[in-house]
Image (tube, rainbow, N blue to C red; front, top):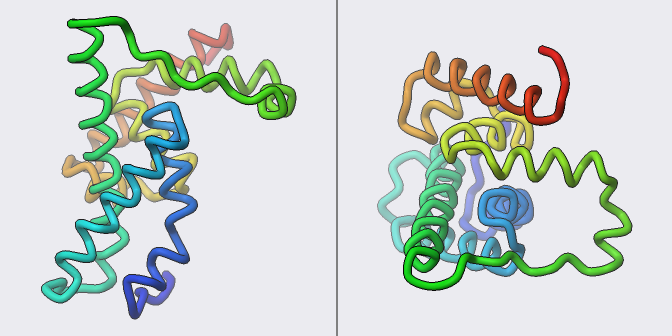
Length: 164
């Protein structure tokens, strides 16, 4: 277990890039992801003086990032009902060349998962969190995390044409 950050700046320096990657996976574009992470850290800044357990700050900010990602996705869904569907930004030619076909297929399959399954897999395999930590962040039981991850992995295996 790592030592808790002594300041908000330490927490930001240590985790902002990873949280931005997490948000990018959830919302689909890096610009919105950066906004989401900045908003989450701003919320934590407002509460920093009242924070009873600095070790819980990372859990708080991860939860805040996921909640803000959900809000972005809800706003996009509402906009899609009343206008045209959200189109994520086109990846640069350089990025497209670097990302292999298998990775694009995997990311598309993950993006097609239900929100909760996508969150659990992202926190588990991208952020490398334990089921217990994921349960705390999402506010569900450890068993729910385990069963959700299992269903998500089965869905991905089917979508990618692999037997499980």
